[in-house]
Length: 374
Image (cartoon, rainbow, N blue to C red; front, side):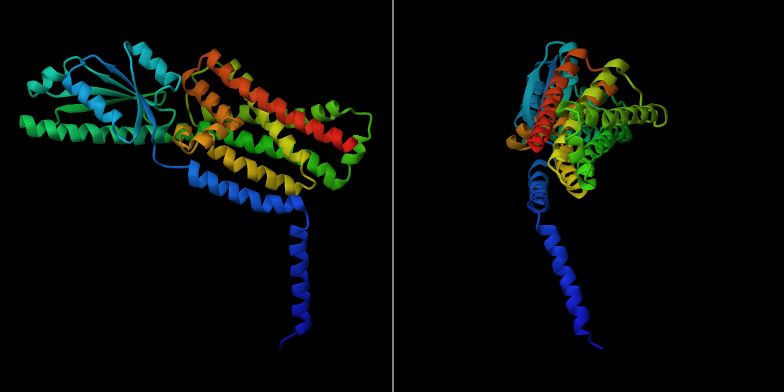
């Protein structure tokens, strides 16, 4: 039988829940802004197509056919810049420093072999640190060279390919996608742990009503900040070391870098992430708000880190925005040291933005403490 009083009670409860969700301005902001922000990030910055590719070319042949192949690469919709190299060392350096996404070496007997109907090899060197991008770029080059092979075969009446592509995968010889994934997970798992621990720190005390007691205690703002920074930093740092050991010894991904530089870079990276977490926590009055803030930061940060798609393929606005993203530098440093023993200077050039991000976010958190005391 229809019970009108039960319906009224349920409707009253529903109304109460809606009011509790939307009565707090911070809740309203966290509910509305993150989905809109992530829509723009997903829709504009994330793509499974690789464009704006920089290629380094070592052209020993320097003849009509080599210039024609390079011209077709440059004039395709995928490639942005061709860097001509004079030595193998220069080509290696360009790929090592990620100035180029791929390298091409053309042998000096290309034209002679084609004219005498012999097969010629073109060496293509991929950056195995980005397995997905490397595979896609190889597909583009294969397509361009295959089209040129068809033209040559019709012209010289050859049944087999005149030009064959020989692939060399640096830093990940067998293009093991698992290598790329598990090393990236070192960053992702450390991010989740450090961000949650730091973001919930102050919000939890506010929710329990103990934060005001902390503010009126003999502790200064700086002492509070240090006390809130060190525990999540230590826990996340130890966790990242354990994960690295698992990746190296259980998943058997070879570690190529300097362990001391790796540990220093990890510590500084986690410091900057915890700065972001404390900044989120200083703006949150409940743990629910802190978790929503973590979610609002974490998803765009991962997407803008180069983990899903190359930063160079994103719209210019998102490329500039990613410069403020600590995960971008953390990901670059960890993979660089792990896979190819990134040189110390490059590591520290990428550590500088992390230090600045950490100082900025912790300064804002400290200002928030001081404001509440006043």
